[in-house]
Each structure stands twice: as C-alpha cells, then as structure tokens.
Image (cartoon, rainbow, N blue to C red):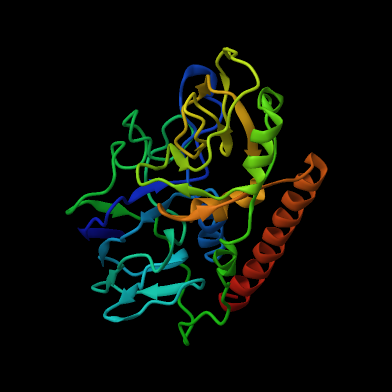
Amino acid sequence: MSIKVLKPGMQTTIQDLGRYGWQSLGISVCGAMDQWAARIANILLNNHEDEAVLEMTFQGPTLAIEEDLILAIFGADMNASWNEKKLPQGKPIFAKKGDVLSFGYARDGVRAYLAVKNGFFLEKVLDSYSTDVKAKIGGLNGRPIKEGDILPAKGMLPPLPPNQSFPYYIDNNYLDKNDSPIRFIRGRQYHWFSKESLQTFESSSFTIEPDSDRMGYRLSGPTLERKESKELMTEGTTFGSIQIPPNGQPIILMADRQPTGGYPKIGEVIRSDLPRLSQMRPGSKLSFQEISLQAAYQKTRKQLGDLEVIKKACHLKWNEIFK
C-alpha cells in the first residue's frame, strides 16, 4: 500500500512525537510542531498516537492513492480536496486506489497532519520516524518529500463495512483561540531582567518575524534589558523556552531547537499552549501571561485528560464500526 507524491507542497515532512533521549549527544528532538493535531490524526484511526504522520506547512501536497487505505487529517484548514470534492477534516476517510488528494494554502493556522491507518512503513532512526533536516536523518532520507516520492503505508486494513463511513468527528476549535495570551512560567534567568523589562514582557505585543521556522520563532517588539551583564554557561533547552539574546528581542525555541543554548531564558511556554503557538504564522501578534507552575500542571493534566476521553471515544467507535 502506498501514496505517490505528485506535488510536494511547501515544506512537507514525516514526523512523529519526537526523538527523545539523545539531546545529551547533540541530537535535536524534532517531531511534530503541533503535537495535539498529530496525535488526534492518529487517534482518529485507532493508531498509536506516536505513529508517523505527514506534517504539511502553509501549502500542502498533491497525493495519488495507489492502494486502498484509510486516512485522517487534522490541524490547519488547507482546503483539502478528494477527487475534487471537499475532504473533511477530523474524521477517518476511505481512500480508494486512483483517488487524488489535493491540499491548498492554509486558511487558518499553519500546519496540518495526515495519518494513515497503521502508519507509514518506514525505518526509525534513533527510535523515531521524525525528519531532522539539519542532521539529514529520519523520515525519507532526512529531507522534505519531493515529487515522485513513494510513501509506503503498512497496510493490513480491516474489512470495510457496507456503508463505508465514519459517523464521528473531532473539531479543531483550539485554532480559534489565537488571540489569547501565550502563557508561561518563569525561566531559570527570569530575575536577570529589570523590573521594567519584566512588566514590558507581559504588557506588550510582539510580532512573529518572517525568518521564524521549526527551530525557533523570532519576535520583534519592545527591547527587554537585563539588570546587569552576565554570561550564561550553555544549558539544555526545551520546546517553548523563551530566550532573550543581546538585542533584547525574544526567541521562542520550537520543535527543531538546538539541544543546548547560551541565551538567558525569561520564561517557558506551558505545554498546553504549544499547539496553539505552533499554528501561529509570521506576522501574527502575540502577548504573554505568567501563570504559576501549579496552574501549568493543572492545564496540562486537563489537556491530557481531554485527549484520553477522545482516545477512548474513537476506540469505541472504531470497534463498533468494524465489529
């Protein structure tokens, strides 16, 4: 079972939830930028949520289905079409041999994820399918997909039910909250900054610059100054670390971040806000709001609890359809 790439889109790569356990050796984590959307795409198919998916950025690909398969899409609305009919998001779809899937430009958000039943037939590199373009490992030879590529699926579809439809659907309404502040907890060097800069950080608006990418979002806005000049020994980074380089303009480290960094960190974006942040595009404005570590834990627990409810519901529906 396979999918042929007719057009690759702007930046389409194979990702999973990341390459963990190797940062101490200088290997980046990478993985899906919007892990919520990537997980949901797999959960809709009753897959393990860490199966490989296609991450489509800004403009999606055109794909030819070479064997029958079941797929699901979740994330940004890329005006997807299926044999020139609108391709619904947030539910499993039966795709037949000869079908063509086309994706346009993202209408809202930046990234959408395509999962196939049972996942793609690829080899893991350091325990992950994720594409690390800088290191040229993972995915398809460590690079974005290109015209003519064949994406092999694992196959082994269950017998198709007579009505060939899935009566359940998941909404991507988290994309509607992009005007809300990005919440953070204090970083290890929070107290290195002046009182005025700390107030400015929370009371001002920042703009995502055009040179932002999967490695980091560069922001422009008021200059954030330190109380005194200090040098920081390099230390580990994480998805959502908010660094302040010498020019005083924040950088938020994202999925392809370097394993270590030497700029002081004023804050860390909370885990539950990372999906929404990952769907913000260059030119978007954002603001920050500090919350306590306990509140951040509570919001993460709620998000993971919501995911478990969705997972159980999809599992029951899937088994009901294919019983």
